Image (cartoon, rainbow, N blue to C red; front, side):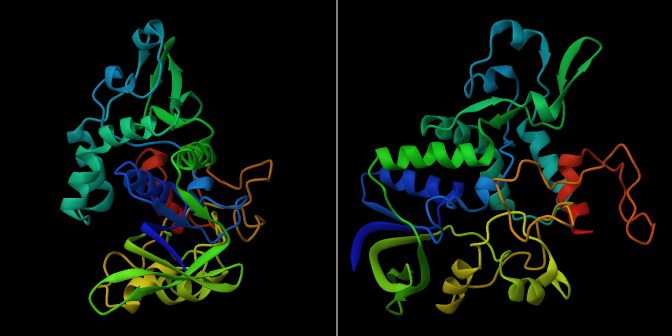
Length: 317
């Protein structure tokens, strides 16, 4: 049995941020990661690393990365004010979003980015994917001016390095199985460490272990027939245990269970994400084309918006 003040289940970006926040309060923290060290990081490792946050001008961006004065002056950095962020979010979701969570996400996004930088994350201008030269002047578009150095994998590595420096213990190949619950309070986590049972006791438990996208049975149950055959862009370790553990002690099901973050994906890609592959499996022919399915029919409105607002929608289609 192990004892800590806080146990965080998972080791992606959300889990690492939770662990670092707790550790900065002076408490002992352990992270339980189902994957080995080489495969750890959850779906965050497979993310492109582009960050959406509220900013008004290049002066806000300078809080996050070093931008030379001539570059700052000669570039149209776009903007993503709090008002624009709200408009985008509600337009894309047709107002189906939690107002309290939306407010926290948007109004605290810049200070969260500054905090991330303080925890070792490195940001750079997103020249490759979200900018172009227009009439001799570089212009950003889509409200995505910054990305993480090294993408999602770089973010996970930077935060992992900081976690280790701050004395956070990380237990790899340790899959959480159930919560230790006395009927009133959660007292810890039961897990399997390399197949052997082990208990972790704590004053608080944070479940940050992702969704159920790698679980074909759950995909079929909640997304519908045929989804058990879908390829998984990210990690093979997200089996939905965090959701199951919470539901098993009486948590209320909430949110959009039939929703999914899907992308247009290569049919011959491996069953799960593989960062060692030299070429991406993304198949984005949009919005500069017509997209047709195997029956030769259009199935989405290709010109409705910038691709970074719509790719998860047309990916599902």
